[in-house]
Amino acid sequence: MAVVLRSRHRPLPMSDLSALPTRIPAGTSVAYTRSYSEYPASDGWVLTLHLAFPTALAIEATADGDSFALELATDDLDVAAGVYHWAERVSKSEETYQVAAGLVEITPDLATAAAATLATWAETALPLVEAALARALTTGFASVQVGTHAYTNVTPEELRRIRRQLLDEIRTHRNPARQGRTFHARF
Image 1: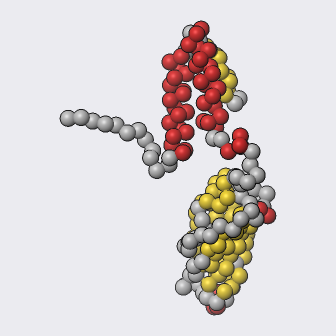
Image 2 (image 1 turned 45 degrees about the horizontal axis):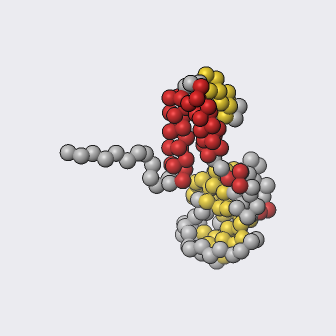
Image 3 (image 1 turned 90 degrees about the horizontal axis):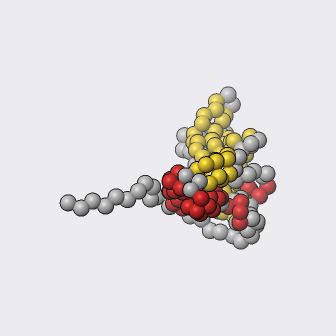
């Protein structure tokens, strides 16, 4: 099946995929052709892509021989970046079957997003914790407010622990394939 990712900013080629991509940048379009040998379009089957955005969306595929052609234009949708459920269903007369399902992540449009909106919560909280740690090192205690949570009389040890947790979370986010800590052992 051929998949083409087109952007209003610049066309991006994409290799063949077997399903809807797991990540789609906002402001781009995805077009792909799906085939199900048990449910050929030429036999009257209809494929519909259901997306569970804040408002449910159903996109009916176009028949293309035995296959189905689907196109999703994220720049036409008012959808915040996030992870959403999707399902593909085929139907004919009174029969309906779910043939595929998964998650799709709509990532921010880097061409239009403000830099601050691309930071994770941990990346936003880390400078606040580090500033509180600097104050705590001179006074012994510090207060810090992270989002809607306020912490008072926090010791430097507690702030160091929070800082390590935030750094671990940032490291995991930036390197998802390398989760956990590396331990070196010598015998």
